[in-house]
Image 1 (tube, rainbow, N blue to C red):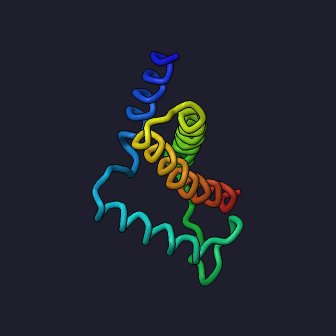
Image 2: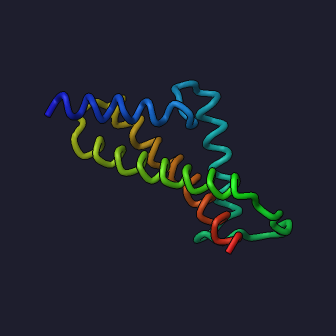
Image 3: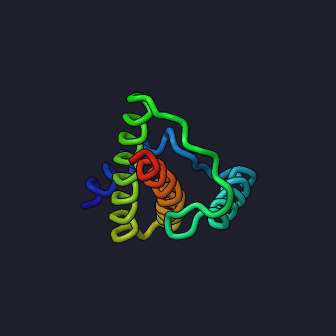
Length: 117
């Protein structure tokens, strides 16, 4: 069980290497401010306020959004598993932060996908 949790944690860290994160208080403040601005703009997946027309997307754009959507869904699922099984406060904090930030970004990607259709 311990090695399974260690493996999941190591995998999560590797997967999150390209994502926002870290313990820097300035970075955390920037992420929180960004999340607050995003929450003011997006309600239930709908963007409020003036929106520029969507630019046509290339297949590379669509592939990137699809791959990152899968990546964020996986990160959220793994973080939920860690929350269910970990007693380490730092690991739990990281998992919770991952769920929160990945959920925001996942909603943004889904909105981009919906706008393209």
